[in-house]
Length: 535
Ligand SMILES: [Zn+2]
Image (cartoon, rainbow, N blue to C red):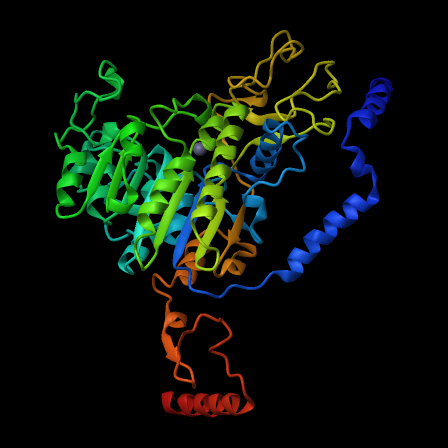
């Protein structure tokens, strides 16, 4: 009964505060739905070859994160929030990817990146290798390497790039160019001696050796320079110093490998802004010793935003007449969640959505496949009965059965678990929208974990319809490769002569099927003959 007494005045208040007046008119919803229907009916399947592919990967950006980030984005623009349309929301095709790894029900970013980039599911903490490779066991690695769509695209004559907000040696970008039994072998100093003896090589040095990557943008300077080498931005900070035991400077080596081409290395915003994409063949930009700062804590005079880095990458890569493949990772959504700082995670997701807009502005839907997805979700919930327009980082208006308020966003596990005198912390008077606020969790853990439910994939452009439905995450690499005519499956890409003598790229999945009764009959006769001959 207590609950009802509390609810009644609140529900009356809700009637006053919810929605806008126009939403009370049923015509508002009818015309809105009719608009959606018209655009669904007008949708045409695009069977062009994807000259360009941009894969936007929100690390840890589960569906709950997308919804909450959408509301935050609207509320940052002083709207109620729920009705906001993010850039990624405008994509016409949506599917769900199953994210488990070969050995774990709930995966990590290395195994999942191997799935959606290399097309093969792997074991936890391993990248660019098949599931025959055991986590951290170098001797299981040899011969079990698998290549990624970044390499397939390069081999097909396209330009390729990686943009991330983490260190460029981190799991997601690393799976595009490296093969490692452990995702933590960033520099040679991170390899156990047994792995060195057995011939394994660190991720940073593989970045120079495996695929010729045109654009590399993110953080991770310290894995590229000799031990003790002072960081240019934080010369006094010992933890920012170079880490390498082999005394190599991979930055200098990379520059010298590009002799005869215009290659630029930059580590700050001023030099980055001075890079003219029209006159630059190769760009390596490393803005921090390790991961970049969270976007809301970024110094815009020192480090560019993910929209700015995406823009520069596309401008450099799109000069190639054969097109490009670009991986853009919003890598710190995941790290915000691990800290249970929902504000950080959501602002990172909003920043990624802005980068999506920049990608769409700079490319053409007719020739560019754009995909937005996540590697895995988090133990992150969106709960209670908050009023329409309630701050997404706020609290439920109705108290829990322990007579205390709770936040709309919270975690199943994580550092926010606290019980004092048998009670949760009292949030009355606490600013739960503060960027450093740590949301409560049911179970105590130093770092919150990933979640295992399917992740959404949104697609737009050539062959985007291939991404509908529910599928294994490793299918994504195969579908992107099919769309771009790179990798192993390219029969549909052969240029065939049509009767008029006009060369036509056969990309219509139905075009190889017999389209007349005569053709069908010929096919039957041929297949009977073949079966006779083969037996
Ligand atoms: Zn994570």
